[in-house]
Length: 94
Image 1 (cartoon, helix red, strand yellow):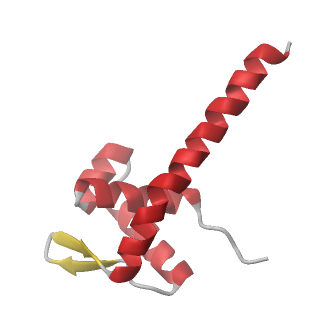
Image 2 (cartoon, rainbow, N blue to C red; image 1 turned 120 degrees about the vertical axis):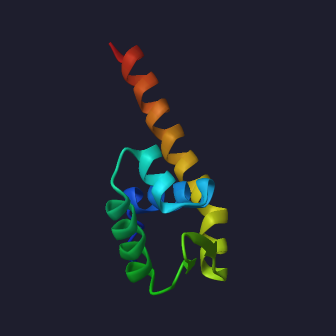
Image 3 (spheres, rainbow, N blue to C red; image 1 turned 135 degrees about the vertical axis):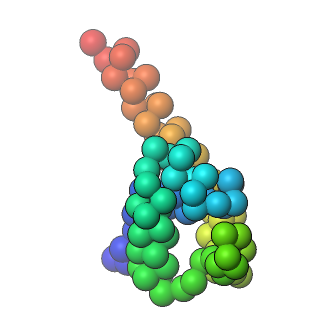
């Protein structure tokens, strides 16, 4: 079975996409900029593809990055839905 994506790395990626900056993503996630950079680099290494073109402080998605960005929100949304659903079931279980 092929390995799955790391959810923390995917969240860091989706946040950088949303805010357009590693530094701002770090603030939003309560992480250091270095931690976000490492998460993105790890995701790129894991996938074997560059996700962002770094142009000074600006970042631009590559085609691989655009492909993943289109799916990241859906994947993370499904994870949130699963968590909420399980918690709701747990509250009504007893």
